[in-house]
Amino acid sequence: MRTTTQKPLSSSDARAAILSCHDELRGLVTETIHFAEGATVSDRDFEPLRAHARELYEAFEEHMNFEERILPTALRDVIGWGFVLEAQVVEVHEKQRTILASAMSALEPGGLSPARLVQSVRTFADTILVDLETEENCLLNADLDALITDSRGG
Image 1 (cartoon, rainbow, N blue to C red):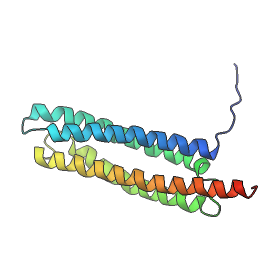
Image 2: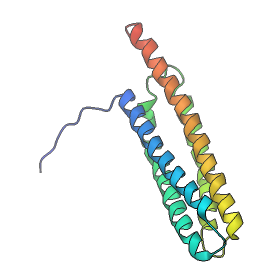
Image 3: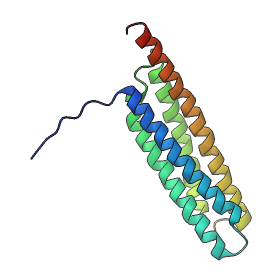
Image 4: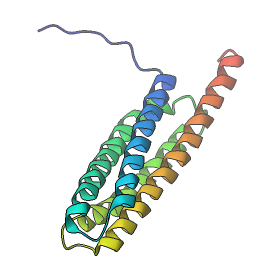
């Protein structure tokens, strides 16, 4: 069996990986909103919306799991606040998992009326976008903290 040694991920690289995932999620949100806008009263037209929303919701769940694994690395340069920021993100993720479970069940046929399904998808998409922006502000602060540390020779 061959083993390879990988260089440990820097906090900057970890933050960049999270931000890259955010860009991908934004793309999925945009696609899903496009399908929500095109949905009509016909059940046939709602299947593409359900499929895209399900894909978005599953990607968001995977993203939260990824973030929780990589956050300690991404935030290690935040002097005195890394653990606090990580705890806040994990707490928000717990709440989002509850909202996500409800949103997933709403996708089931017969779960919501067509108009309410569209509204549910739009509301969840907006929630994702707010979450991404909030996390990015946190990660940008981590970058600033790392720059300050580096400029002081630390």
